[in-house]
Length: 357
Image 1 (cartoon, rainbow, N blue to C red):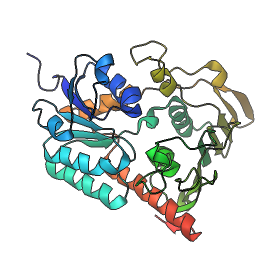
Image 2: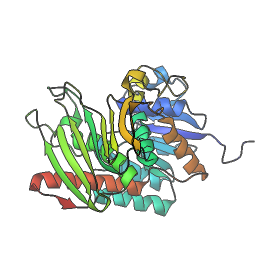
Image 3: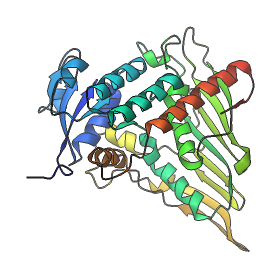
Image 4: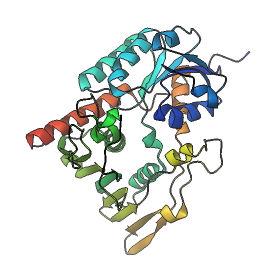
C-alpha cells in the first residue's frame, strides 16, 4: 500500500471555461501526483469529451460532498473566487484559486486567515512565475552578469480594438474586471517574487479604446523601491500591434532584452502537455540578448538561452505542500500583497499621486 505522502491526490475543478480547459485540467491530468476526479459544469458535460473518466456535478456543494477529493481548483468568474475558496477551506479541503486571488485586499487577508485556521493549503495560480522568460530574468538577476539591477520593464501586450461579446472581463461594472486585475496580477507577482513588496506604487489605468461601459484595457504601474535603488515598470495594453520587448532589464553593467511571450500557453492550446519533450522550450529565434561588461574590461553581447518554462512545477509544489514534504511557494499572504498593489494602482490613477505600500 502506498504511504500517505505518496497517495494520489484527487482533484475537483469548479468550472470548465478557458482557464480550466487550457491550463488546469491538462497540467493536473499529466501529473502522476494527481487524479482529475470531478468537474463542476452548470450545464452539459463538455469535459467528458476530453476526460471521459471524470464525474460531472452541477454545483460546488455537490463537489464538496465528494469525500475523497482533497484539492478543489476554482476557475469561475472573479466575484466567486472568495466565496468558493472559503466554502472549500471550511469543508476541510485544500484550494487553488485562479487569479486574481480576490477583488479586495481585505477579502484576500480573510482567506489567508481561514487557511491558517483550517490548516489547509491555499494558493493562487501564479503560473507565470514558471514562464521561461521570467526564470531567465531571475537567473540573470542573481548571476551578477548585469551588476546591480536598477530597473525592470515588464510588458504583456495584445492588439484587439473591439470588445468581445459576453465577456465579463471587459464589463466595467463587473467586480475584478479589466486588464489591471487580469494581467497586473501576474506582472506584479513576478516583481514581488524577485524584490518583495514595493515602497511606493504609482499607477495610470485607462480605457484607451474608449468603449462605453467597458473596463480598463491599459495600465502603466511603477513599483518603486528607493532603498534598493530599483524600480519596476509594469505595462499592459490592448492597442499594441507591434509588440515591444516582454522584458527589459537594466543593470549597472549592462542590459538584457527579451522579446516574445512564453510558449507554454500556446502549446497547451495546441494540445501539448508537460509529458511532451518540447513543452516549455523557447524558439532559438526568441532568445533574449545580453549586452554587458561581465568583468572589468570584458564586454559581451550575445543571446541567452531561455530557461525551460515549467508550469507543472506549480502543481508539483501544491502536491508536496498538501503532503507536507515542501513549503508552499505561492502563499495566500503573497497573493494578498499583490491585490493590495492592484488596489493602490487604481487609487493612484484616480488620485493622480504616488501611494506608499
